[in-house]
Length: 378
Image (cartoon, rainbow, N blue to C red; front, side):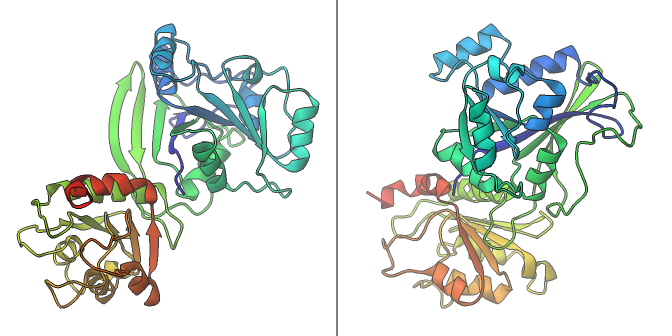
């Protein structure tokens, strides 16, 4: 199911701490960076923080610039982004600034916690999504924000536990990290990321930028998801596959398709597109042909294709679904099921699943995959 673009935002000391253990909040950002954060807030639909962050920092989470608020309204958006928090207990301070500034608020909590939130008279939507054991289904929360509240970009400002959970589950699309030139050195102080098993692979460096005496570093995850659970990186790579489809030479008798093959650690192994150097080659075929057949990384790789791999074709004896299986790949992410424009009863996904492969369909990319094929869909 679709969910918002998730941007994690944090400022840390050089030794990785979010704060110290003193009674006052440790200010890590510079004034210039606070303005940058304000700009980012103005660009999103919602801002999320944990209940612990509300208790510890008492944030307002506002867009402070009148010009940016006016631009939001002119674009048809609320003056302030939706404010979101998560609380297993529902024990929230009704006097906190979070509740009395900005626009709409929403609380995700347990059934029991929902009663507590309503009992203190908070003006907020209350959604019981947290289990009584305190476990939150982050995918369900993100889907609710996307489907019910129309959130397309979500900024997550803390705390460290929430950042850790989203990264470990492969649900973060971007990490914006600000490094402050100081050390905390207190083992009892809160760190940005906790221990645990994280998504595989190195993150992709998107940008570094000095802002006063701090440095902004932006990263994107690269590692594919596992099994049938899509990750943020899956969306990144599928978007690249859809973009490749635009490179295909036009055809009245074949779809324009792009494909990317990515190793489990996030390394791109190859990419290809339909009719790339050959009038009848398919995208998956073009990409796989660039990888040595004995490459051991294929067994745990993912093929991203803007269109479901073909199960039958007239131009070659082996369809792409079979080529993928013969290469040893057992995971495919696609945007669009093949229509019956040229082949009746096509079911490449069925061929793949029947052979034990995982097929993940991300329908939010279907329209993008159709763009270079509009002339075939009239």
